[in-house]
Amino acid sequence: QVQLVESGGGVVQPGKSLRLSCAGSGFTFSHYGFHWVRQAPGRGLEWVGDIWNHGRNAYYADSVKGRFTISRDNSKNTLYLQMNSLRVEDTAVYFCATDAAVGRPQAWGQGTLVIVSS
Amino acid sequence: DIQMTQSPSSLSASVGDRVTITCQASQDINNYLNWYQQKPGKAPKLLIYDASNLETGVPSRFSGSGSGTDFTFTISSVQPEDFATYYCQHFDSLPVLTFGGGTKVDI
View 1 (cartoon, chains in turn orange, cyan):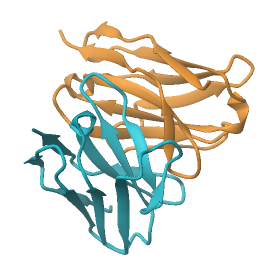
View 2 (cartoon, helix red, strand yellow):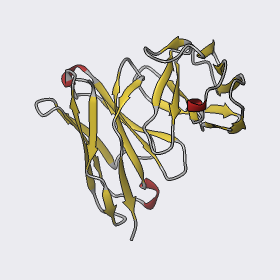
View 3 (tube, helix red, strand yellow):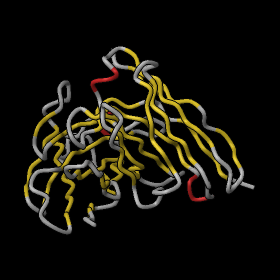
């Protein structure tokens, strides 16, 4: 069955960088686009960005544009979220999700917690 | 940017009640709207896509309707396992996604 497993979360100081990974299995990874969605503690869902199946197109929320980069390695069935210049307000659980069709996150990982704190 | 306004932000219901949640877009979004359920500590689960289509495996007591700017999500007879937070989500052609603020359904 489809499985997505995020990793790489942790505690990081403001201004620093962190890279999250999302490993996929149980499906043909290269056929799918992916989303990153985050959820701050006690808050709602916020879309972070997405990447097409071939990896040549990625789109971002205004709140992370210029600081975060989404990439993928289809040979490793892995999606990445490079987060630079982290801010306290980036503290959240970060989920990756497959895109079943344009704009339809379908299968989700369990999430990884990122805490930005001095 | 399109804004998605979900209401109410919370509601209380009893088992067997009919529950309705609305989502209003700040401009016409056709039927580009999905609905998710999220339980505490868990990832969201897709329930309804393209405003009114039931995702495979989702019970038929869940339904969605609407087009344009006004959308409705209904649980026809709420069950104990349905107590959760529900989100609407708009998408455009890129896609760029926008989530509503969420509706917490509790007992």
